[in-house]
Amino acid sequence: MEKLVQQFLSRLENVDMRFKRYLWDSINWNNRLIAIAGARGVGKTTLLLQYIKEYLSNELDKTLYVSLDNLYFNKTGLTEMAEDFAKRGGKFLFLDEVHKYPNWSTEIKNIYDNLPQLSIIFTGSSSLEIMKGQADLSRRIIIYRMNGLSFREFLELKHQLVFSKYTLEEIITNPLDISRRIVNQIKPVKYFEEYIAKGYYPFFVEDEQHYYQRIEHTIIQIIENDLPSLENIDYNSVYNLRKLLMVLAEIVPFKPNIMKLSRQIGINRDTLLKYLHWLERADLLLLLGTDKFGISKMNKPEKIFLNNPNLAFALATNIANTGTIRETFFYNQLNENHQVNYSDKGDFLIDKKYLFEIGGKNKTNKQIAGIENAYIAADNIEYPDRNIIPIWMFGFLY
Image (cartoon, rainbow, N blue to C red):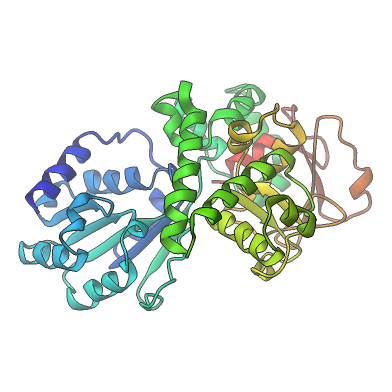
């Protein structure tokens, strides 16, 4: 236990408090059981340590942060550690990377039920189904999901440029005033090009030169370690998952021919669909359907995207297609707080109300002409024009 405490205090000493992710003000930290889900590298660990440093600095003797991939847990169980911590007067237990620990959900349930003096905040990969497992946490837990950096957050983290968030309705109804406020301070098109290439994962601040190598390493960790910890995946499945992702990286976004793609990978149709949903849960893909809530493991999506534009730059062997990058960015940013569906009349139907076509600065209204609540999200422009809105503005939604 003493070694865990020393490791925790060492990490806490080095945490940077200057920039906080968008979830900071959304979490109700008073709940006794909180889960924060999100892909590797989006800042979950930093968020926990920042909260401890800002709000619990006077109660560090009652606070403990541990990562469940720590070698300590090879000899000592999570429940035993929590009981020991509670006996020492512990009140706030922060658990990182819970998917690295077998039967984590059962033990957290037992800790919650049997040690009412403890508040538990834990993180897990988005590939993790928080409710999966034998333990029923659904009546106890509050779950928050963390996306990667928005364009707005990137500007603040890298360039110390602070801007307000805007709702989708504000951007749609008042785009000119909003764009003027931003363009008066920066050249957004220039910064947007920087963001879509190297701005989604906060770890770019550590070593921008090797950013894509870090992304590749993260992908390998997800496929070879995270997913096998959740599913019954053998070596051949890991190989096929990696192969599938690399094939998709060259052709997304596309309307999948499931039979053709399954033959190319060397797996059957049902297995391919299962793999697609695993990769989506791991925040490596985005699957687009006519009804997002109706995309099951047995239904093929209408369209497949990589999760975010940075993945396209990291994985594609050729220069990333501009049209692909635009659509991927728009889907990724809107997917955080809105329902995004496929539409045969435009590129995306948002909240079953707003239709969007994505394109360059010369994109016309031809495809969405005469349709109510239809807009173009256009690249390489600074200001809106009628129903044409600069695409970078949708990076200010969170």
